[in-house]
Structure formats: C-alpha cells, structure tokens
Image 1: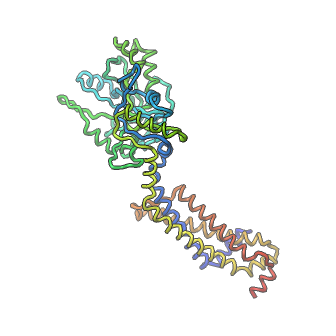
Image 2: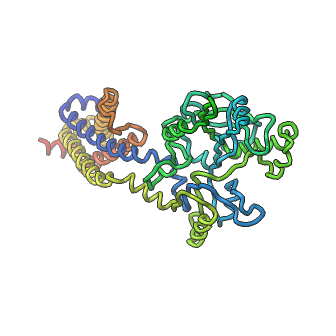
Image 3: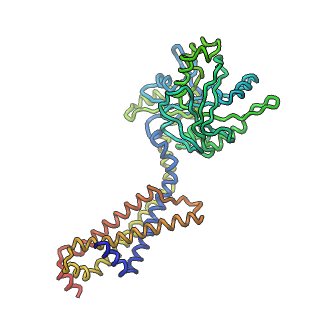
Length: 457
C-alpha cells in the first residue's frame, strides 16, 4: 500500500521529482568523483599497506655476511639467520638461489660450455602472503609449502616458452652435480606489465613504489642477457619459488635419495647442511619490529644492519609510510574542502525541496489521516517517495557513467563505480533520508490534522 501511494506521488509531482533527482545525480557524481580519485592513487598501495605500516626498515640488500661464530665471513643464507644477529626483529626476505632451471638437454649443454646462469629466486612466506602480483595465467605461490618432491614456480619470461603445467628441471654449477634433475612445475606466468617485489628498479621514488620492480622493465633486461658461444644464443627466464618449498625439496633429495641422485661429491652436500642449492638474502627485504619496541632497539638494529649488509638503500618504514600518504593525498587535500562544500550545499538543496513537497502535501496527508491512516503511515509514504527518487538518481547516474566509459568518453579519466564508490553513495543516501525525515517530522510535531486543515484553508 505504501509503495503504491509513493509511486502515485511521483506521478503527481513530476517537475519537483525531476528537480530532486537532478540534485541527487549531481550529489552522487561528486561522491563518485572524489572517491575515484582517491582509489586510483590508493589501489597500488593497498596490497602492501600492512607490510609497510609497521615499525622497522625497508632495505634493498646486495649481500650480507656473518660477523662472528662458525659461519663468520660466509653469506647469510636465511632470514632466520639474519634475525639471530638482530634484536627483537622479524625479517621478510627473498633470495638469490644458485640454481638453473631449464630443459635437461639445455642444462647439459650449458654445463659442457661452462656457461651457467642462476635464474631462480625464492620468497619467504611473508612475501608470498603479503603481495600477489598480476598473473597472465595460473596461480600464485602457496604458503607453508612443504609437501611433494618437486618445486612449484611462477615464471617471468620475455616469450611464450613456458605454459601452465610445463615442467622444467633444476641443476647447479656447484660441486654437487645432480645425476637426476629436480622437477619444477610451472603453476603461474607473471604478467609482463605487473609489479612484483624483486630488486627495486624505480629510481627517484621515496614511497611504497620502492618495494617494486616493474616487470616490463625486467623483461627488457632479460632480452639483453644472453650467452653467445659460437652459434649458441640463450635468453634465460626467471623462476620464483617458495623458500619453504625449496628447503623441503632439497632435504628430501639429500636425505632420501642422496646416493642415487648425487655424484661422488655427496660429502660436500653434508658440509653445506643439507643444502644442494645455496641461497643468499638478496633484493627487497623488510626488517619488522614490535609496535612497542624501544628507540634503543631500533637504533641498535639500524647500526647492526649497516655492519652486516651491503645495500642500495635502507629506510625506516615510517618514512616510507609518510611519503606514501603524502603522495596519495597530494592535490586531493585541495579538492576535499571544495567537494565537502558542494556535497553539503547539494544535500541542503535536496532536503529543502523534499520538505517543501511534504509541506505542499500537508492538506492531502491530513485527509489521509482522517480517513484512517496514521501519521507513521503517511510519513512512510513520503520517505518511500524520496527513496524512489534517490534510487532512480543513483541508477541513472551509474548508467550514464558506464555508457560514457563504453563510448570511450572517459578513457583518460579514472572514474570507477566499484564497491568503495557505491558504499560512499549509500552512506550519502542514508544521510539524505535521515535529514529529510527529521525536516519533515518537524512540520507535524504537536499538530493535529484538524489544525493543519484549518491552516491550509
């Protein structure tokens, strides 16, 4: 019944309904525009926000060495070993792996020629969970991957050489020559235009972009890397694997199949603590600390990192966070007061029009009351009438945006209608209904239908 009367009101007040709808469309356009500008800048930061917004350091490591103990002078091969040299810190690392992935014939040829390329990199679980790059196909690496006798890898390549499900094989140019190659199953192909946490290739930036390398740039570099002996020419791919998966697979081959799969240099494997492939912390690394850590601990770890490591840069995560939000909000902060002012002005205009319509219909509503409807029923009819106008405005405005995008009018404009923008519109819609409700209720408070009819006459 209430919806029937609300639709009737729309038909009886076409001009006023149209004016209210235009006001609402303008209001939603402002909200969608402001949120689209913000999300266009924030969307790149959102996937790594939790990693960056914690106490600690962001470091682009070249190499790190042990300063004391039995491993003195040797490269740091794990984040756990690095943590032991710091105070109350967690290290999220990635690794250069002394391994080569390719086809078995290709591996044999490379070894015979004496030209060998390490094209495998490994990630700690925190990196695997913390950021998922855009993939051309397949899936990203798994966390806590300790099962199976083969590696799973996502591959960066400058050609279409590997497809999902293909199997490559690992070998190493160390003393531990494998008789049986370790299989590597391709589970994902990295999109050549994606960003990935690798070795930062963004110069001149001081915000979260420092974490990333752009894969378009990396694939260009891959094209430049080649081995030319006689007529042979080879462009290597890069394989990304889980460090936990790598350690698990290595241990299985050393413990269970050592005699079968390793050469007479088996004793050398034992000396390397069951590691067939040497790993070394390298590239973008985060050293995270507790939020309540002391300044002394932060200062100690900063100095310790400088002693242990050679790096391209070392920055406080708080510094990266501040620069990031500064860049996200640059120019937007000037738009916010203007946008908020326009939103308030439009809301006041809309509420004023809806209140005028309610006041204009007071005589009719009083007749409804005297015919048996309650003031609550009458109020519900008017609010449903306003709700119909607002929903129509939101639907029409959204349709116009999608139509303009489809026709190519906004190809260079970052106007989006996603969950965040729709959420903002729904919040504004609730504010409109609440404001209109309070304004309309104030017109009938403490007044009888008879008094209203007499005032109107």
